[in-house]
Length: 203
Image (tube, rainbow, N blue to C red; front, top):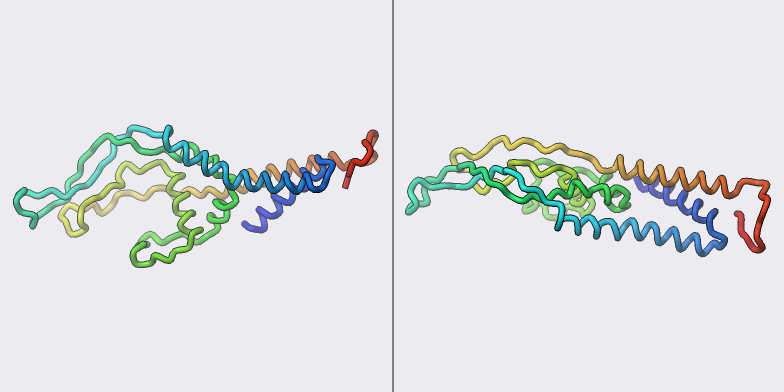
């Protein structure tokens, strides 16, 4: 993933170098583009959490007691309610080209039985990958369980949300931009050149 991103960014730099007349200008533009793609889209994506919400019927599990004065015998009961759930998956394309997200996609996946209390030293990239996979998936209708695993009626199968990778779209987007940049560079550096201004750099 690092090699692929490096090649794509280099191709973008070549395209900018062919478009600008000064070397420093192309270098600055390349840095600005990489910095902008890394910083600006995550801020915009996080801001969409305010507006991208949906009212959905979800199932929550609570511990109920037959005797309200005794907390010894409890059972797990399901309750269906209407809740407002975030739909950050709709704005996730904003993060497709983020280099940090693409690098995190190459990290190992957390095991299904991972417990952050037992293993708190998980690396940042793996945690980010898990978060992106969760954000790419529409909120599961049954995810809120507030019962103890020892309670009778504790749900054993809540379904498994799909594990949707983000990297194919992001790498495809960078590859497309890199290919277009190379095409621009080839067209701009084609010879012979009919008109060339004084002091124009062509290589």
